[in-house]
Image (cartoon, one colour):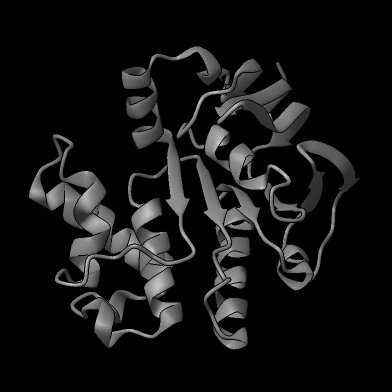
Length: 234
């Protein structure tokens, strides 16, 4: 296996029963993604984008096919093993932030570390580093209600980063932001990929957002219909 490849999917398929019908949101998809790349997934609603994102994040398991991330075949892990793998290897960035309103920015970012065996000092080092990466070190003691939407999303990104995962997945991370805040978030994601070596997979409906990625994949009815490589924009 090429050491530069972090994600390797082969004939990845996801099906589930919905009433009397079998629904297949993802059909025999194959792709490779190199470490440190920023990938955008585009396509109409129901095209399989979020399904693929959830498979890559270890939130769901495929019906068939293989899915290797950093050489680990996560398609066949048991649920408990998958949960442990996900906590150590994937940071998930949501559109609506999912911050806890009664916790400060610092405390929200620290949450993923509280189940680890880290000392308070070690956690502080990690949280401080994450705050610096998202350029929010001066807002550490602010509550979500005291932050703008863009700042809240940066806290959410820092929370995804704090365990130092090799893979970040983002589901419409700018969908709830104004144009200027969205631009700042997309530039931050690009920086995390190109400067800090994070591999990023982002679902978006916005072609302008997709232009920030290195590569754009288009899905339709669960299949890869077009691939535009090495796009540099934004």
